[in-house]
Length: 377
Image 1 (cartoon, helix red, strand yellow):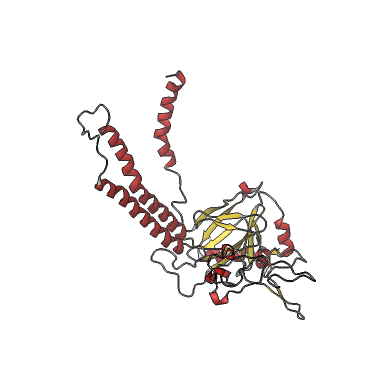
Image 2 (spheres, helix red, strand yellow):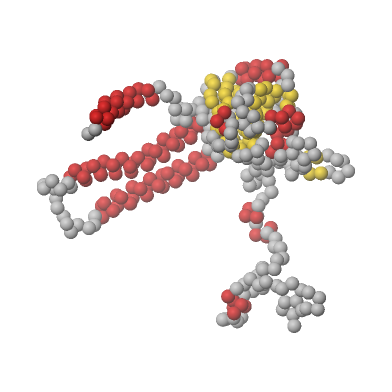
């Protein structure tokens, strides 16, 4: 052993003994969140790891036991050179993983629907249903380069790089992006959700504890990505009303002109507050038509009146808007004429062995003046 390695051994031993003491003071927010949705997601991680360890731990233990028992120097162990099959072993090694896969599949299926970010919550916390008549607080989120914009349409205020939530109240986030794809992530609140330009995503969540938490961008989006962090303040109902009143009294207005200024790339932007907002601004951001003279893709023009109506969000789930082809009934499906579509019944019904049975697609030649169309004499 070299002198360097001899000197390194005490250091490694000390680091191994001290590491649990140092890491013991860390708050693993993902596994100790403050929101009910994030708590259920953490429980899902624990259950999944537990089910997988039911296979991993026995395999690791048996690996050591087999190596000890059947080592070359152990002359007292049973020697069976012609052994090749055991029904009991086959039953164990196949049934145990199968049961675990079934359990994981059932757990994944249930929680995938229960924790769907588009699905409104059915409880505030375990054993605490949502109060009758309480509507979710809507917050519109826009990821900019490189900052976050939060719009509170019901309260008529907006902030940059500051998110304030009332505790024990369901929040419905509507999210989009001004340029590139990004990810909105408050570990203490819920899992991450993507934001994309020209599209809208949704997230339903609730914060159950009062405090200050960190929100981040979890998807690289350019030079200022590292500073796309924002404080998330969870306050009681009275504190939230006071914050809204203070923000309104602070003045400032978020209109299209101000938004276009915010949209320009900037880094390390301090907290900004706006006491008034322009109606319908978020819908125009989603449809990428904030700039004057830009036509909105979802606008419907009423001829004569000159009015415009903003269409619903463009990324809603099937059932919330027009149905795609896969969602339609067979009698709703329409066909369009094209040159290569199958023509009539297969010739093989009446002419077995006909060459036309090999290919049901036929290209009709274009008809020119003085030339007969395909199939004509």
